[in-house]
Image (tube, rainbow over the protein chains, first blue to last red):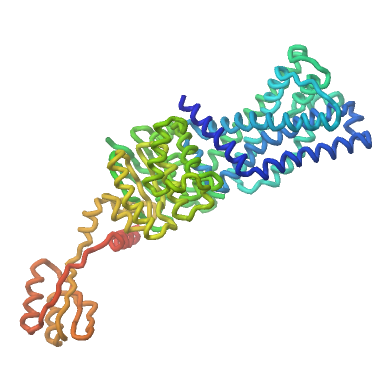
Length: 258
Length: 320
């Protein structure tokens, strides 16, 4: 019950901050939409590399939707931890008796729910603009999406941990955003090993659900296992990296510094 | 019951040149006490507090909060302790005072949705003069109010032990006095234990009954404030005499004690005499009477915590 109160507090903080930083909230939504339009019409006009990789415009919409979701998830952790250190509230979060990890898990859950809702609006806008209507089978999409996002959260935790120790690593944060983009557009038919990278297989399966109309249980079990396995593996690696960095920061007394 | 126990705490920050921040620090704080943790910059006060809370990993030694060890039971330690560590930087400036209090309390499992807790938050905000500013974003508040929000946010976690690291930093005289009055009241009414680290000796002297002085990472004094002041209570008297004193009288006084601060202002002479023992006071009066001087005022100079602190640190530094 008391842990629930932590979640409730984190939820309240998230909504308050979305409201207070409304310009950032709205502008990020508009930016994602405009970038989508540029990519979509650009690809359509030149029949670019994504098309030649056997992808479709519908597939591109799914990948972009997933990328924005990944960006929100990854940023919430990596930039979030760096911001807390910068403004001076990080140590207060560490004073939570249920653990800083639990506070982060709450932040993850809250940002996931909020970003799913926000992204659903973005997806609808994208589908309405392009006229490409996708299958929105929530029961099939949601578990795949969450498992896929585990990889992004894993990287987010690792980067957040590095920010605790090295402080200014925003340049790395930004570069990774494009690396994620790469993971999502890896043509798995040409590079099957790419399936073991974060996001790649998850993206492929979400496309099959949203574009081809397959249900979750109609997907190959082996591929589902890869999505689950890679998601959990990268999350575990991210948590381990964060735990190591957190220990280093506590040994060197860096938590309160920026 | 013992609220806090620190035994042989040692912290060395690693690096090319390792820095010894805390060296074998030991002390205990009983439940319900208000203890001042004093020391010059870099003495190891904040490091000690952070080691107790697990924010910095100690190199050696043991810290316990209500019997729970920081190294093996950090969650139990944190369930009993809250802290203001960086004052106004410890709260979200884009959130209101009330939202900050509600959020940080929720981190300790205190629900902001429960009526009793909401009433308590409002009571705290009122006691700290923040009632009219409860719905104001922190960024719009003055430094003093920001600091108060940070203190209230820590208290709202309802932990029995609270650390206040430099709670008066940046506060004006009026707000400092308010805080001085509020903290002991809080301990009395809620039975909390407070550990206050501050450079503001007036606040510590007014609020704390006991002080622990740290210098160069070591505890150099751990005394009741009154005992510490007694220790530095010199037999120093300030005298005011009508007219001027003759050279014979001054020489006579110098045989009794050490004469300093001799001033002649209009028709009055002021001087300070430090006496070696209690009986010397009678000899001092005799010298003045023999000279025919008219004694208008005499008062013993009271030591203050700042003087005591400086002396203790100086001696501690000399030993270290």
